[in-house]
Length: 183
Image (tube, rainbow, N blue to C red; front, top):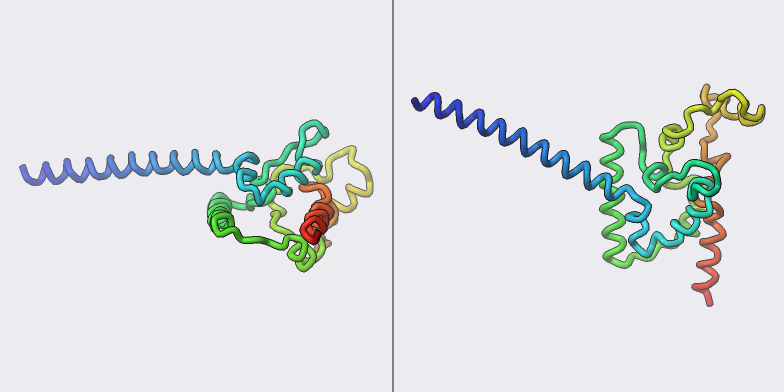
């Protein structure tokens, strides 16, 4: 009798553990989805200038006739789910701490010191949406540049050529803010 109770308790523990894991996975999936919207990213006032310049960029508005990208489409890696979740968690914790502590960031200096068009965007995000880089009908210049990129005969990245695609002219926006703060 003791042995069957032990088996029943073990089975119940496995079932409860499995159900708990499913509920936890569902909760995580809901939170990942709800924190992946442009509205969520822009809910902190520090992100206002980024949201403004994103709307001016080619991927910021459906009215411009191109794909609308969300913040997470560019600013999180798309090489694996594990890496996506790791970077999303790390970035989220960083942004929450910066917001709560009132950390001021000199974005213009950061941008200037990082080199040509290097910022927190991932090539895997570009590649996720832009699979047909050498599709029939594209201009010869674009075909040549993309073919060189695809066969890894260049060290140039997507953002080296398409640096204003995500946020329009972000540098000018930083300069306007810096000029206003200097007054």
